[in-house]
Amino acid sequence: MVNKYVKKPDKVAIASTDGQRVDACFGKVNEFRIFRATAKGYQLEEIRRGPEICHERSHDLTALNQTADLLSDCQLVLAGRIGPAAMDALTARGVTALACSLGLEEALTKLSS
Image (tube, rainbow, N blue to C red; front, side):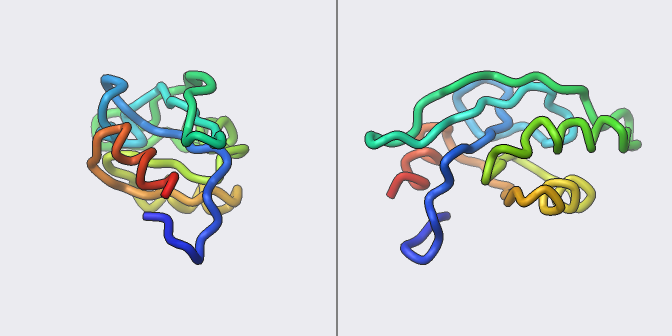
């Protein structure tokens, strides 16, 4: 994920349904775990709650922008799935978004290396 040419993100937001895996669709989750980089890896800093964006094949653009604003201080967002509208909203705020399916600890370990 992050290599020697990419700066390690200071803050990472992770969409997870169970706190164990990066598995939630960005638009269907309303809870993000925020991790901050430390000398020993990443530590859970807080859980942020926002509005659900997707409702039966339609998207609430106001909720999408509210969620992107909510996460705008993070450098990276990890989610199980993330659509182009969410990618654009986050990118416009200087946030990188990646879709992946990993265990939470595995994802954080990869970011730390």
